[in-house]
Length: 297
Length: 256
Image 1 (cartoon, each protein chain N blue to C red):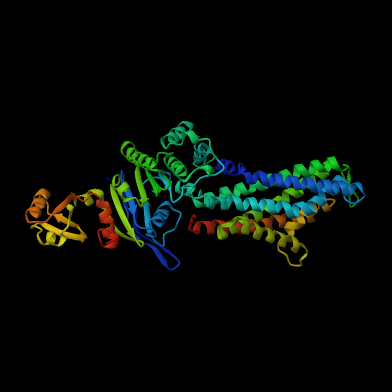
Image 2: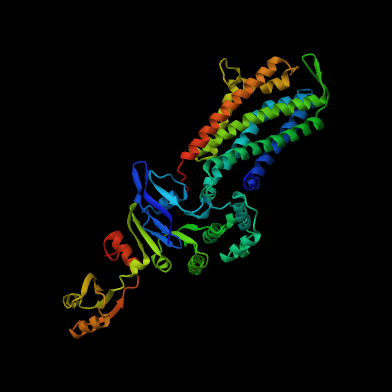
């Protein structure tokens, strides 16, 4: 896959504060690239630099597409509050000096679930509706890259699932590349192909989800005797962390988890639960951001 | 592109409220003047009414309305977060500025147009329309109207400059009211400086006065005055545009 957008040592300083420090992002065509990080990590600033709202202090942003091939929004989606949803989208055609395609507008409003509200003034929209309108606007001209900042904000659970489905669908059917900043680790884990984690403006990791998933050998066992379990771990099993009755371990490739479980039980460790750790992105995230597997440890 | 700007702003409530307010105040002003005329006070003729209206309404209320709206057309893009729409679409910042400048010119024309139509209507319905004596010359009604339109056209150019100044202030202050008031105070300052001995902007103001006060507009002096006035306007326009373009080009657009 070719690189569609990349940043090279992207740096932004506001007054004396370095908000983004030498960030290198590589978004390949067809990626669903997710920018993760706690509040204040520099995600929105990074998106602002990519979109062109902000000027980098140093470093570069290189986009392989045409200028109009990028779409999206940062923070709360922009709207003209005195115009209807339809008029808001029509205006985007006028801004790009293109004839208004009413069928396309209606189709997109239907796609994002705003058909019934298409003639209502956008200023009266809820945050979720505004978010949907922002997504419709972003998709209007079939861009190569869509940038969304916390797109699930204000959406109800149904809306979040629909949004996820829509992102996946457009990615797979139309090949749209996505750059999404989000806090929703579990949600993003289901769609991301590549992630980057920012912390205090510094990029801690950029990796494909596949490479993160290679570590499928992390298991959690629960027992009333965690110390005994630690002592009796068989060869080829590494202790990662102990948190109360929960013990996290990593099995070497090829080790059978059932065998490890049986070994512990046969040696008198009362194992009440033994499962593969499902929230791998969350695990990686907390380990990278806070140096531990869970934030509350 | 300018069609998009017009759709955005000619459909805002503020545009119609300000124009309506302007017309309502002009109506009140004109009726008051007509009342004064009936009891024998000035103005007596349509031309005198138009001059009086120019000296009060056009010098105070009209610029305030225009400057408020000019501030709105720039500040609202930050408030609505819509500044990012053209930027993410790849539009150059200079193009965004020129679109706003064009819109500012159009809205200034709209406000002035409403005033012109309104004031002409009141002038010729509430006051007697008669030829005007000026320095021994008699001006026909058509000539009077032509001179008033020319004076207003020149005033429009001056107000437009301050509309642009308002945009510079919006880019710096991000506050509609502060920018409009700051620019309005600068406008008042310019008007009050008309009598100052060394005033580089004096030719600008003298052109307007010449249209309504000088009997013969075909003299070389008037030609020179027009040339000087145009030069001052051009220099002021260039300076303001360069500052606006440069400040917006360098700006980090942080949307709340």
